[in-house]
Image 1 (cartoon, helix red, strand yellow):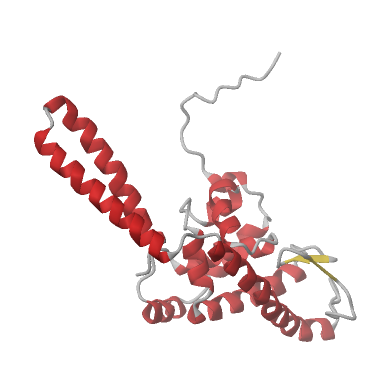
Image 2 (image 1 turned 120 degrees about the vertical axis):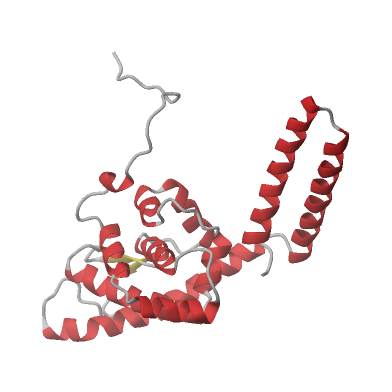
Length: 246
């Protein structure tokens, strides 16, 4: 006998937070980012213009991805649709990888991100939320190798506490080299701007043609034409929002 399994059963949306353990690292990220003064967030908004997504949400998403060893914009974007802690941190919003990458190359956002990265990892190491022997930050395992990083994990000595933030800050700067490579790889897989603009033009012409056909269609076919127009309009808006330069 099997437990009843029915994918077509109608269920209410789940509260994702209830599925996350009490001491999960995502909760620490959430708490630390929420503690950022609004004045710091506002200064970034003023410099960069009004963002499509809230900076705190973007910080949480990126920090959690880094804590899991994910630095690719495409993979981070996928996590917002597939990974439960990430979906919770994102409020079930799904920024595109282009939006994520644009945030990461913004000098003003990078200041916030670096400060939070150092603060979070300092706290997480002290609370043993991150492995004491390996630290997943750039897609590779950073060994606790004294010759390379001189990290002394899970020690309570004064030297450890004094040097920890400096070492994590240096690690962040090194990690940015890997991030830059990941962003470059994401961009190489894209269509060119010219191709995207051409696609935008084709969509505009398609929508205009559907508008014209509405005048000629009978009542029965108007519904079908309107549905098709809504579909292409939605696709064009997404193209313009996430892919074309503003």
